[in-house]
Length: 328
Image (cartoon, rainbow, N blue to C red; front, top):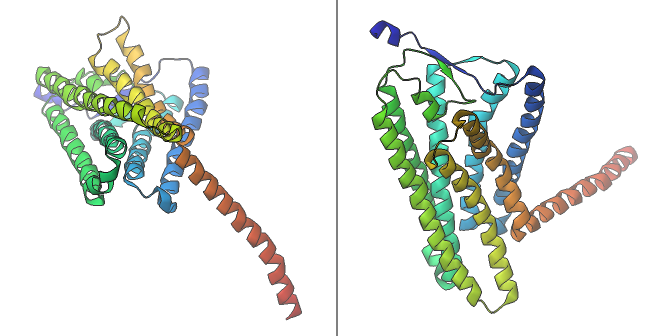
């Protein structure tokens, strides 16, 4: 057994069991989605960094969420695209565990960031006069750093528990990336402790944060209904509805994957859910925030208007410069 445990030094990601033509179509489609994900979240980051009007706690947390979404996509999608073109291409044992660790880290961070963002909206709407004092930059940075550190430590716990297990074959992972449950199926030892920790983590990182978010938005809804100004109610609903859309997409798909009963075809259905959870969510988040948030749309218009003005000024300055050089 000890000799067999050293045999598995790499895994094979089976990905999607489809025909070669469909795989090529999926490669083109997913490549476009990947580009949209990077561009969309990159635009959000660019707008927040360049527009001083967006230098507020809300958009500070939104920029962290955009970074997480970019990291999500970069962690899982490139390997998936490679497997679509070259099926059964192996991934090293270290690379597989690194992918698992990063995926768990980014998933935990997004959960905690969504809770922090809901608290930020609660303070902004329910305690507007005390908002600057409560959500100071020191508090915001502390909350963001705490989210990143706690998420990394929790993912590290899962990684350590995986490393204690022997892997002596088979070495085929029926997934398009090294998802933790799929990796545990290949272990040649009892994984009860791992399963218990995963369930406890789901309660702590999914159910707990979701309850906090729901409590925050219940208070926000009550406060919004008390607003006398119609414009104020509209602005509050617009800001909070975008956040609730992201919360619903993220927590809904995650709870279905990890806490719902297994279906008759769990593995194939889980691939689709993970595809939505780790791939489509990062692509949809910037669209939701940009289309449902008036401030982001205004900032985007200002940036485009400024860019067009700079291009026009360059257009007029170039002939003038050429004319001056000819006269001289």
